[in-house]
Image (cartoon, rainbow, N blue to C red; front, side, top):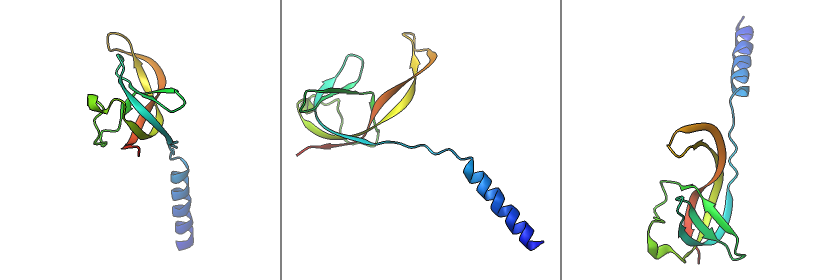
Length: 111
């Protein structure tokens, strides 16, 4: 009886763990120069190859404030990930659509 109880517990735990969802976050890195904030409130960076990258938001734990105009023209090491957000219309109402955006997860000054 004790063995049967142990097996039942192990099977229950295994089944519970198999149904958990795992979110895989791919982190990307980039070294680029900050160009400012766009009219649509995206953070604009340009790398050495002149490729423009726009970021939707920035992790709130990052202490560097990109709203400081003195940082325009400065080079940064950026760690970022993609996330999915819900799209809003011009009135601020959710449309039910989703889109992928880039979010800054870590930001340091490049040397």
